[in-house]
Image (cartoon, rainbow, N blue to C red; front, side, top):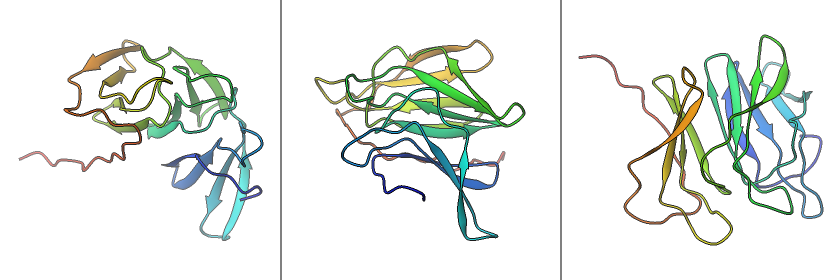
Length: 159
């Protein structure tokens, strides 16, 4: 990577590993980079519209999403989407809850924002984004309050 950073969003998108945002201890970034395993090099990608760290990142179809996080002055509910067709970021409808340290995962054509921290407490809530309706809705919450939750999905095969 071109800069040392932590608290980034990481996702596999378009066959590459993308790293978005993060901080270096002094500043928070809106920059995005991807790793090309064929050349063993990092390359710049279009920057996000907003700086953020401790956010979630996930790919869904031909789009990469970043959600929530912290911008240095507040906890975020905002969501941005990158389109591989236009190679541009745009704003998406915000989540219902501010979420830093949120995990974002995609499955079955939907995005799920899991847990996080809203600036006052750890969250057990889960929100689902449906691209067909362009809405976030609450799902059943987790049993316990968790801040930095790690999530992943295992695709299920039809029986």
